[in-house]
Amino acid sequence: MSSLRPSSGWALRLSMAGAAAIAFAAPAFADRPVQLAFSEAPTYARITAKWADGDEAAPRISAQVSNQVLILTFDQKVKLNLDKLKEGLPSWAAVTFMDPDGMTARIGLKQVPRLAVSTSADLVAVDLMPEASTAKPPKLVSPLVAKQKAAAEAKRIAALPPPAPMEPLEVRGSHSGDSSRIAFYWDNKTGYKVASNADGVMKIQFPKRAKPDLAYLHITPPANLANFQGENSDKGYLVTLTAKDKLPIKAFLEGDALVVDISKPLPPEAPPEKGAEKPKVTPAPPAKLPAKDDGAIMLTPPAASDAVGGSERVTAMAKSWSDPAPRNGVVLVKVAPLTAGVELSFPFAAPAPAAIFARGPVVWAVFAANADLKLDATNLPTGYRR
Image 1 (cartoon, rainbow, N blue to C red):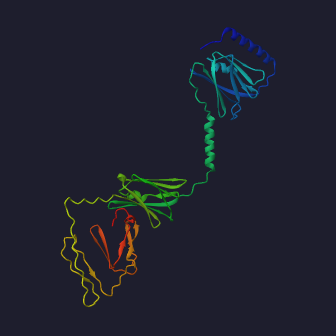
Image 2: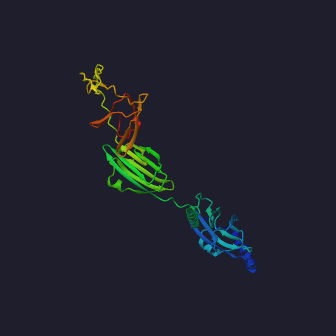
Image 3: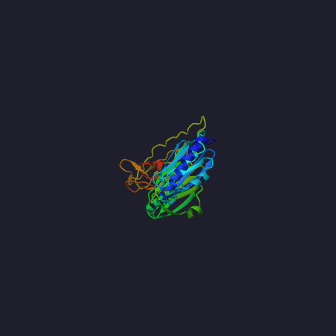
């Protein structure tokens, strides 16, 4: 730390003393008090000023250093306690003086500084740093800034329209075989959007805010569901479904309800053994119609065959039988997933005799019609296949 040279120091004190005598004789017009605060650190000293009357605008101060004297100039007449400045900055301030105009304060310094001025809301800071120091003083932040931000946020929130009312939503879960199902029941038809679906996590956005009833989901939690999260926002109700073991998730509408299936994939078919030949199917000879039409349906006896289930069977229809197939011979099968199954509709041109039976896990449907049944397997719910 350097000190003032004796000659210049004495000259400074003498010039300030003479000015003080002039100021003593002149009337004081300083009228607006300024509150000062001080802080010292090894790498800087700070003078902080704000209006003592509570004005939230910072005082306008220009600062400069001339001949090791800090000159602070205000844009109006002010009242300062410069004695406090000497006490607050003992390593920097040697003497202080207020000019007769009441707008300029002069502080004789004990060392030559680098100068920086900053403002924050109602505060202005003048920082003094040793010439040899490269460190920067801390940023000036007024406590008023946080209050202003809080007031602005409160005003923004107050201006927002009230949130849309929450509508009742019942969520149910079930499990059958290797498939779990979650169903969403609103009081009226409600759209949805799959926001994302990857790695066993599906996000569903409903356009309404919900008051969800999850009692059924908690009583009988689906086995393949790892986690269920729901959150209301200004965009509606966002549901996040997480499947166990990253199982695939599929969403579709069943009537007015949204249904989500989480199913384990079917096991792959075992590859044929090397050298194994496919069984040969020997077709049976064409059936002969009876000589007399008695309205009976004749079945040809099965011929011996190595095919699985025996050889192809041909049914001979009575002459009174009318083919219910459409003219083009194609029946487009309609698929409608149900909460606990699937519904298939066969739109024949006329009523078609049919038989339905089950063999193990497979359900068979047989129709008395010469028709090609077209079924899009991609429309089948998870866990079903043709």
